[in-house]
Length: 120
Image 1 (tube, rainbow, N blue to C red):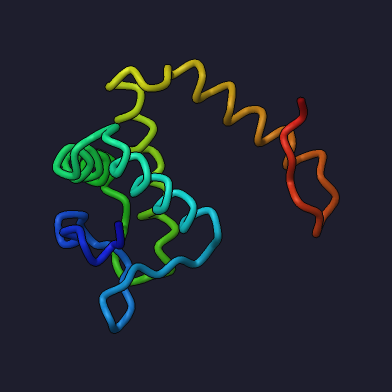
Image 2 (image 1 turned 90 degrees about the horizontal axis):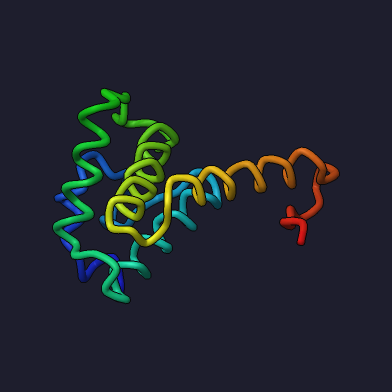
């Protein structure tokens, strides 16, 4: 599935280029976007469920998601994805916190310029 196959207008102020394709200021933003598309493709949730979850998160946060690098928007995107996955029972809130902490620890213990790897 390509982003052009979906109704991106339902996703609020998604940062787009002149051709209407999503733009990302950092690799994690593209990864969060791609993960969301993949989860939708595999039937984890309907696109309308995703649009509603993201809309709720954007409204609740009142984050400034206007013209910028998209950082605040994609932080809300990630929060909405986590909330939707937890609400659907795909992953628990505790599992999300454990994984977040594991990544933060791995990042803190990785020399600058090196790839970040989770410890086994």
